[in-house]
Length: 175
Image 1 (cartoon, helix red, strand yellow):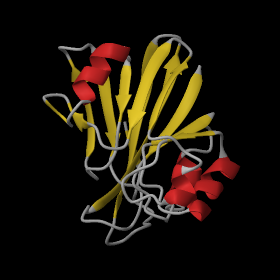
Image 2: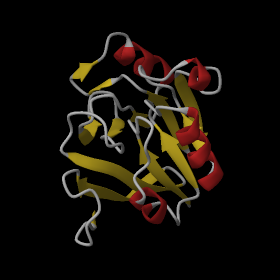
Image 3: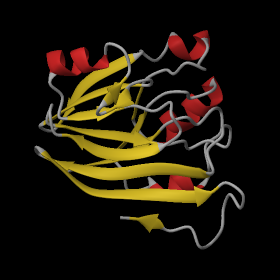
């Protein structure tokens, strides 16, 4: 079993609760808009990181991180890109890429809106972890953890933090 921490849209700041929430994870996925090299290095030091760059990421990030990641964890094929849309409203060209590559899990960021949903037509689980950073229009800071066990995606949990209070003792994972 592989435990995954998933975040996106840090925009140069990693909320301190990420490190506690992801402490038992084997690796982290970042779905773009990392923000700066300091944030990238901070996450890479903490856990093995698979990431894509986002639309706000500069050359310093883009020379180290690709736009698209296609990889396999255990028996789950994963496709990750920053701007991807969601089932029924994919960004231009994404549905064709998903049909071509046939992933089991499609991960993207960009919208700052947490969404976890199935694309029944393509047989894909879609996850957008929302925004883990403090910059943007979102009201909640969100990130996700889950496990992959062979071909199964299990134990999905969400951390949600009210941006107005940032870190309160009442913020608990939702599962």
